[in-house]
Length: 434
Image (cartoon, rainbow, N blue to C red; front, top):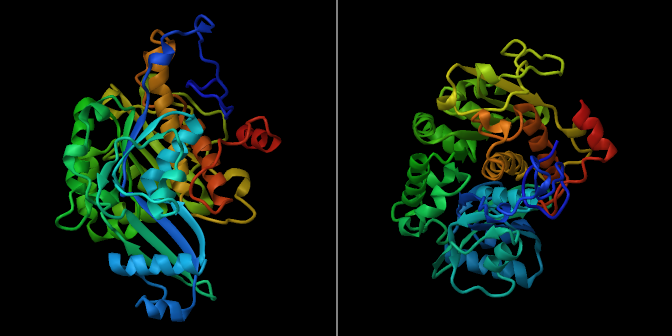
């Protein structure tokens, strides 16, 4: 199976830049502008090893997550740097992580919207964000601000207890005027997180995000929402249900966030419930793997060749070989589901869970954008007689997402540093054959 796209590196789906109908180089393919847009609260994650005396000095409560002022942040950061206490300093943010991973997997362009400090010094946090972000992520649309971006400190004591200090800086000052509507209209998808919708009075991020979402809805560009954290959803579940139903096409979450928005513990049942509101659902469930749910028109359903599995829904994976569609594009819609166990049973040692869901979403976005690219470059392909949302089947996407998240679990950084290992690897063969 070939996966369309203009990439120089080999991934799971190696490609040629050729029209498969003629097996000749397609001269128009270089003209196709295919990209994903994401809106982010730009921040850097800073991890350091400290003691109780250090926490007391800066008025931090051990084991708690707390907001700290810019003045305290500057003193704290300087002290950590002067005493070489910083273990890791990574570009952060769930959407920024997702776009970075997407660009690494696809070796293609994505566009990040947000704010960035006007004055950047070598080695500071703004510099760290830019230098740790793939060059394929277009940062040219970031709005300059006279002040710091967001910083999230993870301070670990001798017992392993984690204390969090969060400084928003000016990360929520993205102005609606900085949203280029033509950029949204021509995108393959718009990706946002729940964090954007709940900012302080005086901030303009929510207003900017809503403008982008409405623009995407009007242009038929899929809106992808990642729920971010269960605590935010638990505060106003009814608001989030209404928001998702009104604006969102693809919803991604973990099992805790699924419980918060649906009130349902079982991930498959929760995903099924979310199909009342959206077209496609991705739910990561830790050691239980990954669930996906979507729609397909009755005439395009494809039956699985894998053993059928029952849960909340009997034989729920029966049509997992189907390519998901938007509900509005189905004349006789039916719900389809799939589940993938953790890749190779999961890693022997998990070094980091932060960002695993972002990597899974990046894989799904890669498949979605590949579908747009193929539709634009191979116009007469029989593949597009079906108005599908993605290039691959629900089952194949689930495996791809699961495999991408595995790579994050076995490293400290929430961001992929390279594409996935070759599919021909013996371990990959065993996984993809299961």
